[in-house]
Image 1 (spheres, rainbow, N blue to C red):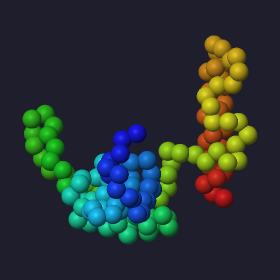
Image 2: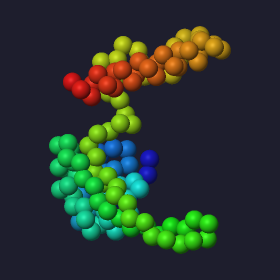
Image 3: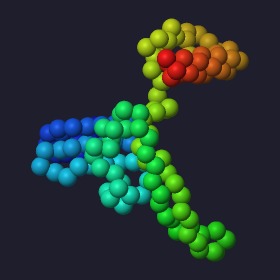
Image 4: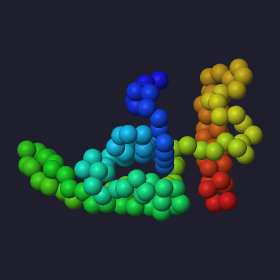
Length: 134
């Protein structure tokens, strides 16, 4: 694992989703990362404290402008992106699962692997919905 801080102590760290995090390091500037949001929006508009508010189910969105080209025609677009989202839909809590979060069990082969994987996906989705609304 790569040490991005060269051994300096991290004092605070907030991670809302897989690629949406902020860290505060002793003696350095705050590090804020959000996937698919321009770095100037993250640097100017989003503060470190916004990540802490994001943990409390507050969703934030910001407007950003992009320069695009399609069929040799250059134009600008303005899009609204969700910058801070507390709902982590990429990871599922397996606390109440009966089946361990592995792909296959035992000696399952051929068509049974396909059927089992479909059943497992449906099972995990049901657990996700169940945990989301409880």
